[in-house]
Image (cartoon, rainbow over all chains, first blue to last red; front, side, top):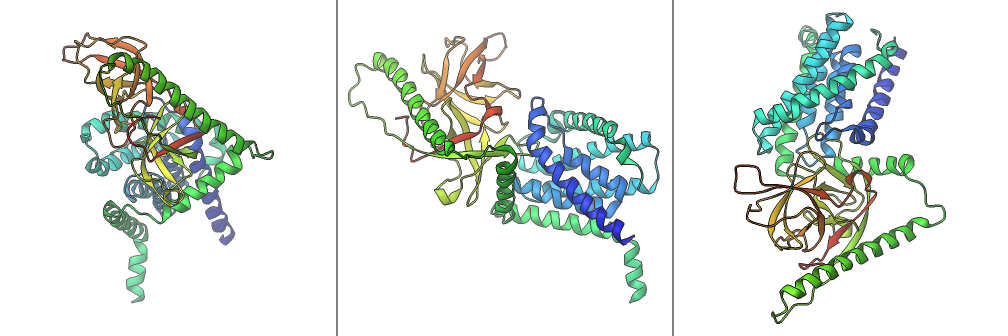
Length: 162
Length: 266
């Protein structure tokens, strides 16, 4: 049991590193216009779904701090949205949902992340919230969700309930 | 006491979320006023290290310094070439003017591109030079092909460059042939748009767009791009002008940060 817990943390750390590298070097190659998928968000949802609320919240918060550190926006904005989504994904785990329901939940969580992030971000932007929702949140949600579906097909065997 | 701790333990998920949210708000408020972030150098250096290990070919035969020297020379020559073209046109127009001031040169600092900014809301590059080399916020960034953008965030060893393809980027510019002024902004895709050029102005496909020099950030006569589409079909006062950037932002490996610019290209 203790060994499982230890390996769980190592696994989350390695996955976080891979997601961060992919977000940094792979995502710019597949962006369409201004829309980019968020691989880190997919990882946070995955961790919430399969490891629970505490790993989801903590991973979201810590990765968010690092994401913000690489951007000229105030530190804390991404971590705020990330930890809410990590926590919510962890709550979904408790319901033991079927795969289809999890897919829908993931879509809602991706959308929720965009809505929360841009709700805070609009105070630093000249754009209106409605404009941000239509120009950023919806396209990014769809793109991230599609990428998540592709990942789930390729890695379906490793996504069994822990 | 134990009962109380057990009670609290029952809500530890929510408690952790509350702590994380509280910390996030504190960080947002704190760093909104104080942009210096101790994490940034660590993250930048880590990214630089990763780039060095995974994405760059080591310069075993000392090709890299030679490459940097040649690229610097290339930027100098391209700038001079652009200035000569511009001087020729200017000479025709301004033949009668006296006291033509000789243009001053600027110093270039080479910087490697460590990576793209991973944030979905900001289009920028992470560069491996910082305040230690005298880089400051709002320094212009260019390559031999033309203008790349400006520095928006600086730490000791790294900085972030906002590229032209960012929604917050605005650059005072002019058309080389007609000297008409406008503002360059991103069109949301892979092109730029030249704003605020009246419909009465003659703009042709193929016109070169340069920085105007009416800015404290960008020296004048740096190439921004070439006009690829002109339309007057809208109902407004201004033309819709699409500009192809001269820099390929997807293939940037090295850029030059402009220091000590005093208005125009040498």
